[in-house]
Amino acid sequence: MTEIINLNQVRKDRERTEKKAEADLNARKFGRTKAERLAEAAREAQAKGRLDQLKFEDE
Image (cartoon, rainbow, N blue to C red; front, side, top):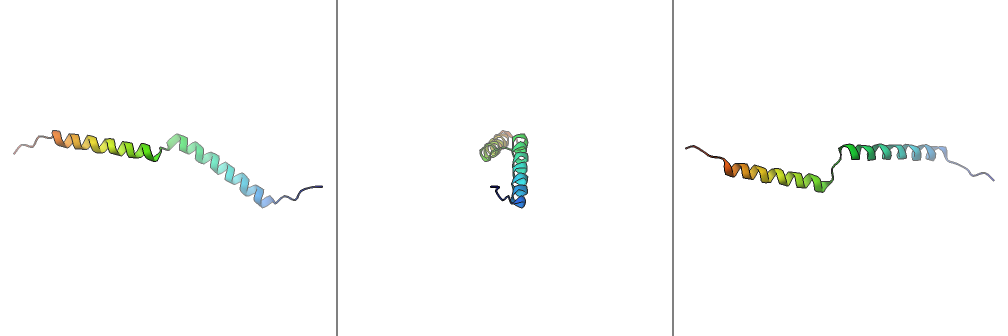
């Protein structure tokens, strides 16, 4: 006995799989985790603070 297949569902599943694969590839190329972004922002803020402390203002 043959099973009935919903071709619309098969098409949507295939497209979903392709989009997921592309998204994973882009995440590996360009993505950073939230923790990495926050750590970088903290390092930048700390460096800016140190630079501000070292500035010499001539009055």
